[in-house]
Length: 123
Image 1 (cartoon, rainbow, N blue to C red):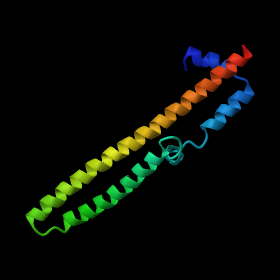
Image 2: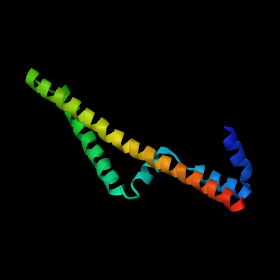
Image 3: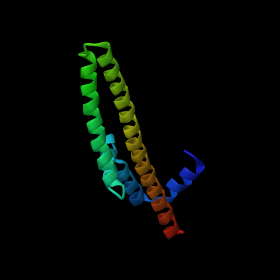
């Protein structure tokens, strides 16, 4: 911890500390995914999640077709489709996880804002 963190923790009373500990509970991956579906970009997050599911199903189908291909031409087509779907899946998941990280950062900024406001009330 830094000196600033130590001063900030010393300024908090037991109620503030209990409130901040309550905020830390239950912040697993599934809770964070659920948080992305709310807010101003919640509709986009739902759309991206649906697109990721469709791409995943398409990827499984392409892999299945890849292993059951009869000719070299079919094999080339399904390899290309598998790689394209895999890349698209990666891009979609990257957007989704960046959104999760943004929500986490905003949540932490709100916690800091709350701490500073409570310190100003006392001082």
